[in-house]
Image (cartoon, rainbow, N blue to C red; front, side, top):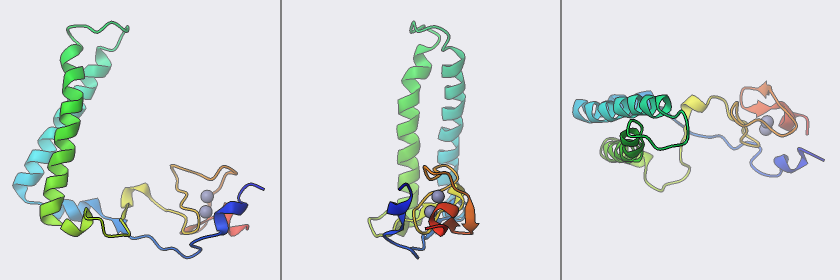
Length: 137
Ligand SMILES: [Zn+2]
Ligand SMILES: [Zn+2]
């Protein structure tokens, strides 16, 4: 029966959450400037890549955007990781539990489903951190 396997563990597992806004506020202005600049370049680059994506032929127009995409992604991840390592090292070390992004919204304390990843049987919120699929079992 669908849903019966979700109740076995962690019926009251509470998850700590990662507050990105608070972490951002803990970064230095220089760190924020570096991350922000890379992020803006990445988004504009994505726009360029999308705009020149008509047809499958690699074109001279599209080529630099394609080349920049992995570079900018790597730069962004690196800049953010370095900044977090300095500002809030506890957030990216290997200490468990690792905080779940707050922007994900509610997470079921029993099965871990969320608005982005509903249970196969379909579910809603029975309580703030308990989905209807788990509540019913
Ligand atoms: Zn659930
Ligand atoms: Zn669910």
